[in-house]
Amino acid sequence: MKIRPLHDRVVVRRSEEETTTSGGIVLPGSAAEKPNRGTIVAVGEGRTLNNGDVKPLSVKVGDVVLFGQYSGSNTVKLDGEELLIMNESEIFGVLED
Image (tube, rainbow, N blue to C red; front, side, top):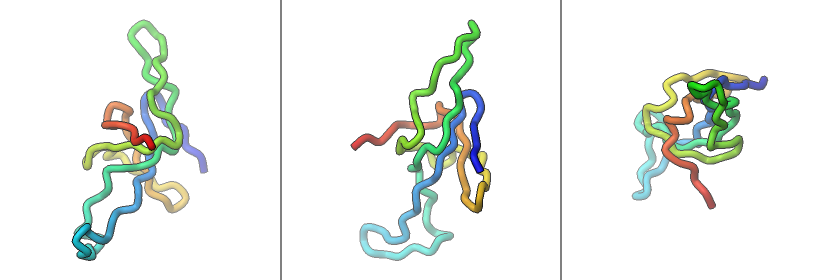
């Protein structure tokens, strides 16, 4: 199933959470924090400005992004996979190689 977000929204697939700390301690799923990194799966057309022009988004499909722990409070399940829907403004930055 495909999803196309509207306006300045993006759909993000959260990265897998780490289950082992740097010290070697294994965390159960309930104790581990949700990761604040993910990959963009879909992007909207852009934000509509007051004059009617559409400003395209700065991110694109495939970008690995950082966002806040409580960003993207809208989650959807598609094909058994949990995805986040958030505004582009909730993204802190894009990770580059």
